[in-house]
Image 1 (tube, one colour):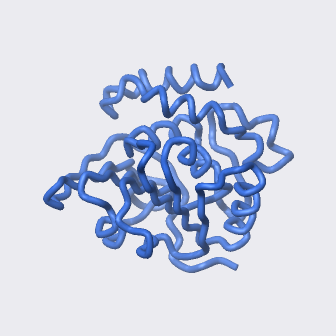
Image 2: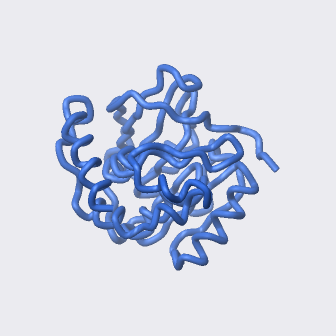
Image 3: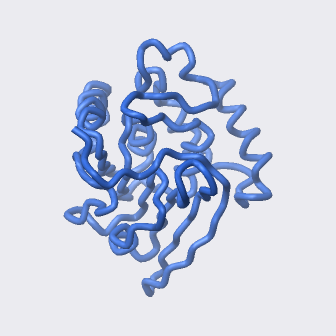
Length: 216
């Protein structure tokens, strides 16, 4: 894990000219270091869990590169009292990292099999402040809004308006935006105290598409 954390710090320094982030919040890295990534990947890939690259988790989905997970977590500025929405639960790994930093995580996953596996895994590993539902992430999870932070782990063609509506004034939304695999940018959307929205692109990325139909 220490080797992986050093690789993440190195990537952060090397991309600082794009992201504006030369270091990450040490709280984020500490939370990251407490999560057993091998428990969130298929058993046959466990030996690769602590390399700094994405891995397939089935159903055409992936667990993101550790550097990207850490960066996105840092960008939403998590605090202990925050309530955060994640769109795209996947294996539950990003939610587990967030769970160590905020009060509550609500996570939406459109692939039913992945959502059920993630629910069981997070419960078994003791992440009691994460709740997962099956559904279309474009709609967010309005029942628990507004959110201090929203983190989307799949690329949308456009930013879903529902997610901006569900973001609390003073909150931050981090989302990959762009076409399938090409021309995507990691975008940070901030809402000020008056509800005014500011957007900026921080890094070219490659994510799987944000799906709109529930996959059984």
